[in-house]
Length: 326
Image 1 (cartoon, rainbow, N blue to C red):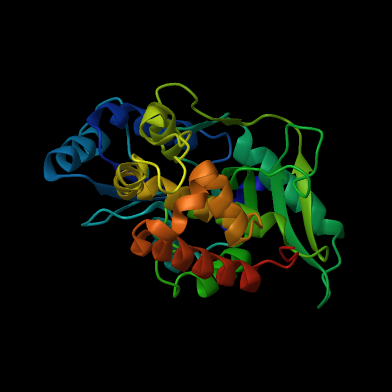
Image 2: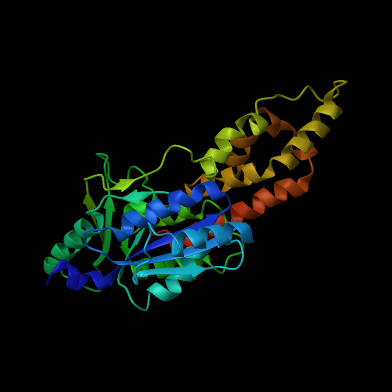
């Protein structure tokens, strides 16, 4: 059977929230690379916008741009309110699961090389010919691995993977009902960690050829870009004076304000550290450094928020990871 005959089993999912009109060309470049694949497959784009002006500009570029033709296999789903990345994927999953067996991913400002879908489909098809499915043995999919280390040793981004749709379904079944976990900006990291922690009876193939172009420049709107650009605001390097010192109370009050203003960053770090196995005490000591000593004196609602997030993420990890956290 030819690749084209099997291509209907495959699709690409993209999640996008456009808050800056300068990023619209990146989305068009992304879509153009997917549309131009040597073996075209269905593309699902779930997209939301910061406001109506950006929405209008984006859709005009998509539908009224003479240099960009929307093919019938590009399925654009416009969401009426701001939608987090993994919520986009959850909404697309409801549609994809009815039509496709294998799912690829792409960030909305990245691109594929022209042969990426063909190479992935051919690799999976060739493996399926000789793969013996049993109740105990499953073909999970494959991942693009340009390093010398397995994903069991070195973490890979979620977009490296092409996976069986049932793996995505199980992830959403367990994660979506838990408040605040799917909506977090780092839930894609949780998804990637879930994929790499599948039991050995879930078999992954690897492809060593670089086929995915990750945009590294002009990425200040990303979580990483935001943190790098605001590092000076929340880097926690100060030390409290001794209890009883004249400046002790002022220091605690100022640091409490600092914690309040930067709580989003501390929650971000808590989410990431939890999903890779750090316990709460280690997280607090690592995040607050020398100021861990005054934790009992700051507003406890901040610590409760960190603790509650830790507990929710840890509970989800305990459920979805086959290889459990230590």
